[in-house]
Image 1: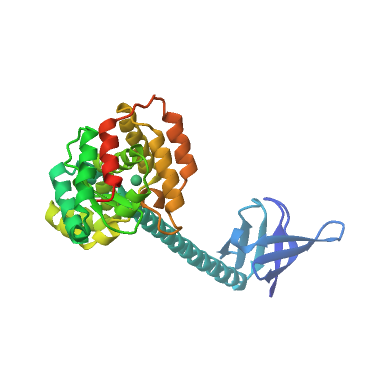
Image 2: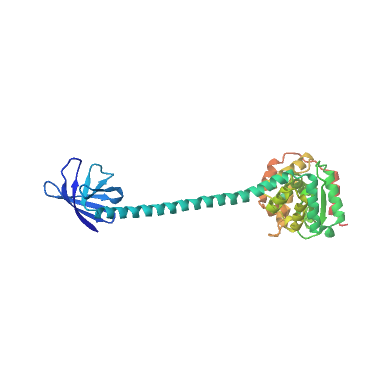
Length: 357
Ligand SMILES: [Zn+2]
């Protein structure tokens, strides 16, 4: 605390009155006696004060920017120094605070940019990969599919007789497509089927064993066919292998994309499609059945059998990602509006398939 003798002027032209002036922390307080002898005080924040030295009076002159017209005069320079020091400190700390704020602001901006980039990367690369996938020509998809199929080494487990009959069954369904659909029945205890890019459809014998009527097989093949025909498998593989595919494709090296796919073949037989793609495979598959007057209940029975057969974790491809069977049965039934006719050709092939060789 500092104290000085001085005088206080209430307004321009008013008589100066004697004042005791205190400098405490960030305030200057002048105590004066008014006409009736009572002490009144004027307390000013130092930050609001403009201090100057009046040479003629050899006094420090204080005016308050918030209370214009009032003035405090203090003899000597001591008060001026005191106020200057405090104001210098206040300015310095304000600069410091400002700098911290600026830095804080920059960090927030930097963090936001990184966040946006991360989100863009996570969303954009899969999105772009899918866009690229949609433009991959059929013969390139065939190369991908063949590479994956070979890498899986499934041909040693192939059931040649069932393979021939199942391909014959699908051909008799007369589905027109740009793809050369190659169905392979593989001996195995997995209740599963999956589609690869370019036309390979793999069906495990354990799944065939579960089927009891030909519309169920027609439903199964139509569903997997739609994954091929609508490039679902290619899109999902591009999405799954994301940036590696993206970079290779960007530089136009589909050969190296094929290599990447072969390396990851094992993951690619348990592809999980999005709910949207799965529904597309169901509904377009159903449309194929309806156009051929094949009983749409084939789909419903297929789902029910798979649900019963699937021992929990070992869910087949089209139950694995979205096991909401009841919902799928509901939308299949909603869309089923034909009177089915028996297809003797398909029925005969199916019966041969089910017969022990
Ligand atoms: Zn599916």
